[in-house]
Length: 626
Image 1 (cartoon, rainbow, N blue to C red):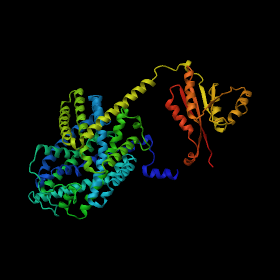
Image 2 (image 1 turned 90 degrees about the vertical axis):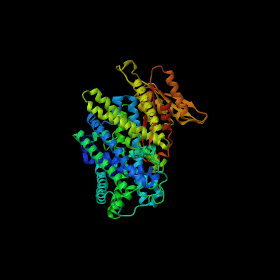
Image 3 (image 1 turned 120 degrees about the vertical axis):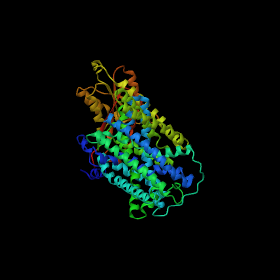
Image 4 (image 1 turned 90 degrees about the horizontal axis):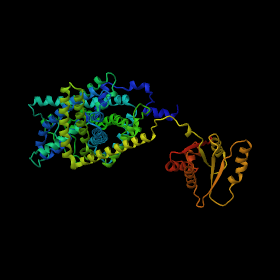
């Protein structure tokens, strides 16, 4: 094993055989960091996104975060019971695309697929930017390097995820549980202090002053906007239903256990943070302004002070926010594979890599996430308006699909009602999120969904057309099996051209050696043709190739050869035309720059201008090492 191979295996792990797939399956404990990071980490920015919209209300703002959070938790509970049933009904992975396609038809399935793919890309971008944003709030001097830090985190996530599901779960387990444990301790201590103080505890440390209220008018429109922003905390809860097959046996039980733990923890975190923000009078600070501090940072200082526990908590928040994009890495490749199985995405997404991953899904996710981060400068506030719409659209289609699934099953009225309630609740939420965020950027997501559906339909039409043209429902026709006309481009007599001509003689007796003359000077190849080629073959009783000399007054070489091949194809009624392209293959990349790449260009032009009766074959001559 070479040094480069050992270095590659160190970073990305050794290749895994197909028989080792069972070892890559995970249990509920590892499933929480793999599929729950996005949902759990959203507790760090979901409540803050809602509180930010309440800043104009001043001290009155935090009082409204509790009812808003309770509404979100009720919706979360409805979605939880709905997805438990989805896992039960689709043990091989019942993501929104699969459920909607099988139960609501092609259009609904493509809508769910487009919404989910966009949501996963946004999940990765928002998670990374939120983590880096939290780091910058703790170390403002890093703000000029926001984008660079985002791309660095993306690179680290890519390396970790390329090692496979099992290794990813192990790596992310410690930061996930540390984040959850520290926040639960903050909430428990805060609630105890709240109980001791009769509901009005005093912060351990002084909080930043709350700006004066700019308005006291609390409108339904404002509350709907706050609710829609807070709903970003629900993104990622569908991840478990998409990745059921990643769990070890019993897959259904392990998947449901993981989903239950994730939803329970998220509900506790959201309600706990909301209650403590109201009790301690903690309001959001304007993002990007001087003196900005995250809500979790203020809450931790208010409850636990500014000691070592504060730094451990904030470090875990920073780490988990940055790593929350892992949910997209876990589910995006599975989603694209499911779509590709139905020929709505390029089939390259079906290929499994060296670590039993659908690697091309990861490559595309990384490229799109990097593009999104670059466009928006890695700033979370610019990305948030685009977020959550795709997730809720997928929620609604999935639950509506499950209603039709249970209706066809019969005798499952209770389950059908659960999914129907989920479909109505998430459908209303989708409309609320779309309307309240439309002008702020939601229109971009809506437009991207339309573009993605158009793209998937175009891919499907292409594959249908290809299958229609290449499918064969009859045996081979012996009459169509015959020797081809072989065309061999030759520039001079050499070992390379000799190899090509020898192979041509084994294929057919109709061989045309094509030589292009670019001047009127004596041509050594034409002069030596009889001595080096025709004479020896004639004396040996073999067929003699025909020498075709083309004149090119403008010194073009490729065009005359291509035009000749196309002319031969037109003149021959049934024969195939086989073009043998001799080429020199060097051992080192730098040696390639010392030779013209005319053979490569000839192959490209022939493939572009050719047709079904023209066949192009490489005849390589490998240069020995010096």
